[in-house]
Length: 516
Image 1: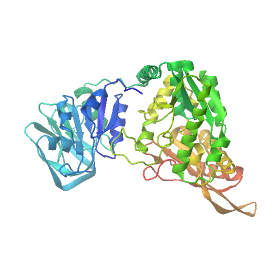
Image 2 (image 1 turned 30 degrees about the vertical axis):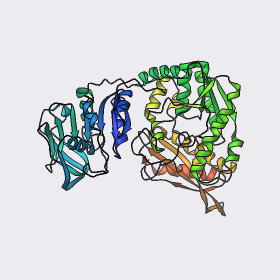
Image 3 (image 1 turned 90 degrees about the vertical axis):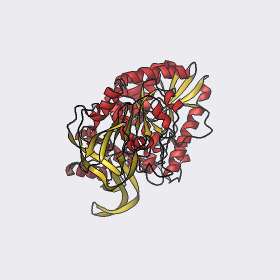
Image 4 (image 1 turned 60 degrees about the vertical axis):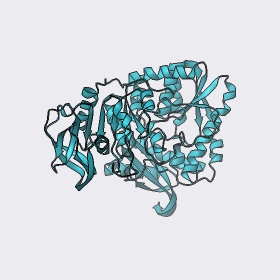
């Protein structure tokens, strides 16, 4: 899609583990932000309507030969710049100051004191706790800079330029462990950059409708529905933008949750009046996945078959040019997307890394720059039901990435039944809304059990439940023992072929939310 027209805060990524957090904190202030590689050009920044720059932290040292550098042309753009940690050191280094390795490092919780009336610290107490993560430090600055804060270790923790709107902090305001971190960011963005808080769901919907209309023109769009909130929001957004030129296709790949088909058709077709073409192609997908156990192969097979299925429908329409899908910002980041900074592929998302190279359809991804919580808010403003908007995320490959090992109809049925019981109990106990994502995983091992005084040798089910704000990080959910006990008893007693249930207490990182 065309570029979003809103004034943009460019978060320049130098490899920090907190880069995505910076972008999120800015979005939480209702200001639009986007992550870029550190080698982005001035022309690209202008094209993206960048009005402010934040330089992220990073693991390198500015004085080493191969460290990522700061483009000095950024300093000539006459727009406010905030350097964070490594970003601060880059600013000082490029403007004649000196950075060197400190006698001590500062990691984790630290205390700072600001001793000026600088606008960056408006409504912030003089002494606050902050989050540090650095070994290098600023040891010398030119006369153009004012030191406005130091740590209890007498290390410079914040500076501002006397003549230019340049600021730097050695700590990480984006991390929740930093007191008043959000206030500091707000001071910079609102009071210094004078940006308006106009990144709202309403404005996103308005702009997206205009962008979709301009891009699609007289052509038609096939929208791939999966049943989850992302594709449902895309389908609804397209319906509002181009009406009947959007053809929603719901393909049943045989890897959906129990009763998924009925739920989708009722909520979208009956509830919002969206015309949905339902295709049951479960046999085709299962044949393609026969004896495939590698998770990356599963994702790529499903991604390619989805596209082939959509392409086969083109003959029924005269002007179909686009395939619309619910790709989100975290999908792009985890798949090593090119729009971000230094990234490694954690797992290929079927809608990013799993699409065939010879795909005939052009991609339309209206949610590509949104985090999951932003998508939910857009869904609410579009009128989607609570059942759709608040349902837990469900991966495009469906149960294929929750069935570890070989996929068969029998194993799918076992997982569907177990998962249905788990989610039902969470709703009955009022736990469902407290959890970001909950599901069952079928493990490819069998265990010995005793049922009815007889020996059993059956399947193992793992329960997974996490809390998160955006899916980028997650903490395992602490259930009361009686809830886990109830889940275990009902699954073992009601799902044929299961005799053991375990609970996954791994956070993200080091694990991912999904098992595959």
